[in-house]
Image 1 (tube, rainbow, N blue to C red):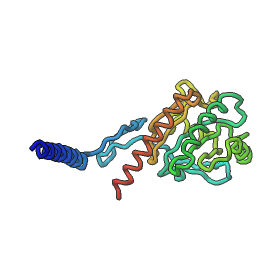
Image 2 (cartoon, one colour; image 1 turned 45 degrees about the vertical axis):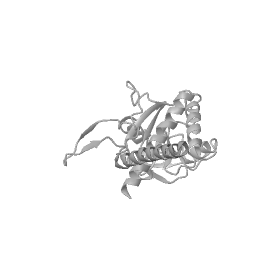
Image 3 (cartoon, rainbow, N blue to C red; image 1 turned 60 degrees about the vertical axis):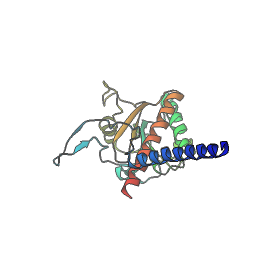
Image 4 (cartoon, rainbow, N blue to C red; image 1 turned 90 degrees about the horizontal axis):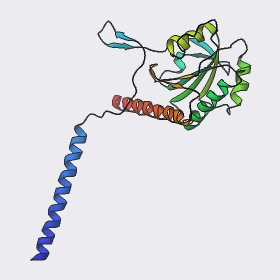
Length: 223
């Protein structure tokens, strides 16, 4: 008699556990997932169709360290971290680029993540100069060093990438330590201190992971 009760109790517990599990599976199957994400920075306005239009990286045409034309189309569909530097910078730029290199190594196998460093001294930083500079960091395939019109690069830094500190002017502007994280649609999602410590580097890594997750969810939803 006791053995039958024990078996019955065991089966009852198993049924309850299975019922709870099936209930949770049903709830999860009906739920809409909301993952932690990053805000879209910059001004926004209502378009003619009533949809919200967000700030995006403006169109441009420059040259990369391989001598190829580099435009905003090279970045479409990819997450990128942008910076502004010059190759003869003695202290600030090497410190910033050392941090970028740490992050770049973290995502070197992620084809949807790239790094773009625009020179603010294009007169000195020719294609040949940038090609030599890229070798310092192992000439990574997902890190582009860009030259071209100084005016166009400044416009990108100030108005597209939000990388110019308030008070800076075109006359005395040399470079900025700020790093701008941009999603696959050209929306600015975060701005970081380039010379930050390991904690700041970790924040950049985490932010890129969030954007990759967001991107993958969007791609899955389209299938």
